[in-house]
Image 1: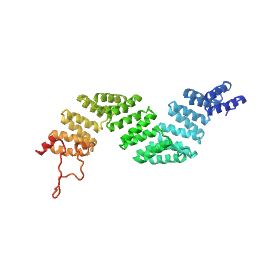
Image 2: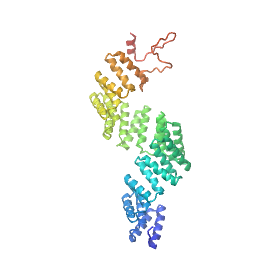
Image 3: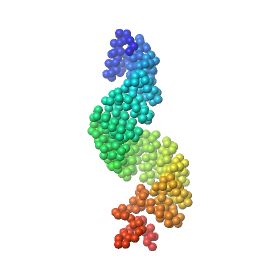
Image 4: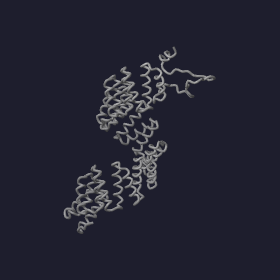
Length: 453
């Protein structure tokens, strides 16, 4: 530390005590008092910069710490502090450069290594983050937060087992670490291990019953496993703690949709859109909720907003086309489906929907062409095969049409077409001498009579 006069040295010690005990106003006054007589004392400038940073006055912090570095450029901690200011100013590149300079000056500077890892993580430079965290842990392996953040980086890289190991190490150091249990739950979700995921979230909530992130994540896992009622309960609990979570309102709306409660879904999704109007996905989800209730005009408006926010939003274009068809705006629907296909020529769903739109207009030849294109892109896409079957039958190609119609059993909603979920094997046309063949209706009475006669 640069020397101070005896009087100012005593003042500096007093200011540090005030600063460390949280009496920031008193500390700031003394720092300014010292600088009135010793304007280039780097330690005082540095501490005044840290205090300004704590108060959110980042530009002032930048000025004071930069001046301290000009006077004392080899002080590693000054560069580390400046990195924190740049991080909060939204300049991650400069933050990284400051942390790297601090480490260059002091390779064993643990705090700078940790902060550098965090800066890399925010930039999605996960491999570099892992390197910084591991170096920091070589210096001090007993810091739970670093093991936790290392686990987050591994998770983001898809190294799930390494992530779990890192979280477990953080829990060995700090057994009551709710963040680590929550993060483990997220990894178990990725590994499709819902029981372990829910157990991890439960342990996080035993430590902190008001941990809304764990409650929210538990809701996501319940939704993923089909327990929509419990998902609703968890999202509502999360929102009771933090009523400004747009993501919780959005997922609550999706859960209500799965439960067939479209009005509740619309109410929740409107809240999501109100909180985060710039999120295209929330407008898209609200449009889907309106579509379920055949409120196509409102749905179309939501999809248009989503596309306005995210011009390449293919799913919004496709669903907007479906809504336009539902409201009998067939030419407009065709235009939107073509727009989606222009954005993504490999979208087999857009091809299929274009085929369906042309089919509904009676243009079977064009419909057939788009169904074939969808099947070329994705040969196993059952919906295109099924729709293709109807076009072939309408065109009089019964042999190929009935072959394609067998794809009805592979559709996602095949039970609507073939509701008889009977045990045993279906007849494959072979001789069944000595056996009994059960014949049952599949379609409505009109089709039944047509095939009987």
